[in-house]
Length: 327
Image 1 (cartoon, rainbow, N blue to C red):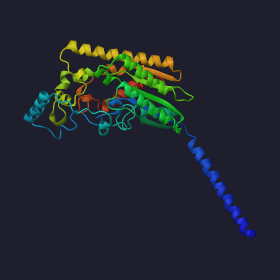
Image 2: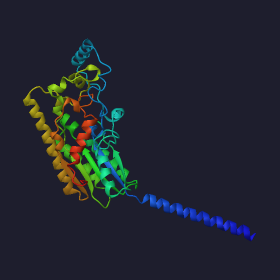
Image 3: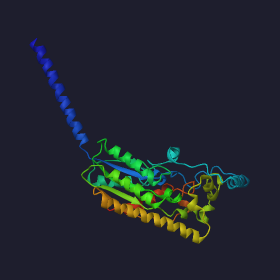
Image 4: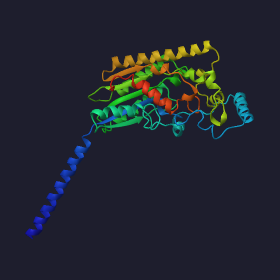
């Protein structure tokens, strides 16, 4: 009987030892720093169509000249703009985990560059990407996106929100939304992010809007894309920012560029306001992609969004604008 009690006692001791050892392993495993990078914005950050390029489908399937003329004539006759890829409808065409300039893993995205830089000094650090960008988003949608980021941080799975990228405003400009409304929505967005409580500041890189009219130059309009259609025709079908693409003279182009510049000035002011109002935010505004000269080879099959190679180039350009993670 005594022997049985001793055996039971030993089993209990072994079990407790195993449990303690397992707990120690878990503590050691969870001791690695876990950081979150968030990406907010619209279709560019979501990587819409980034896995394609102008001749991606054209090489294998093309329409005859008479068929192209028929499609174009129907578009021009009806003013057809039914295909408006926004929100969840765009998801099958987005490449946020592969080719997005912000979080793509198949290019030199901000996420890949950030992860590499952090792990140089801390090889055991865990860096996760959370891309909440929405195709077709306006500045008003940033509030919902920021709420998702805040909720993610409240799970307690991350030591800090290490880095946030924001690229927004293209759709606002395309629809001539009031600047005062845009600025108020951006302020509300930053106010939400500032609610995240952490020891280090939340670093935010806010990008300006690229020169959208540049994607509709005469040379690009004549390029062939999906089913042999010209970029002029495919853009008419998709209705991609017609307000910024339907220009014919240099004077019209210059006026549209001035609108973009005005919007970027507003974004810069919003970033400066956030730094003054929210002490735990460190917001840097960069207008560097405004100087990017778009050519046909830079675009996806919709003749509007950047393809994977261009997404990578935009990432490299903006990486040099952030001051926190340089070598």
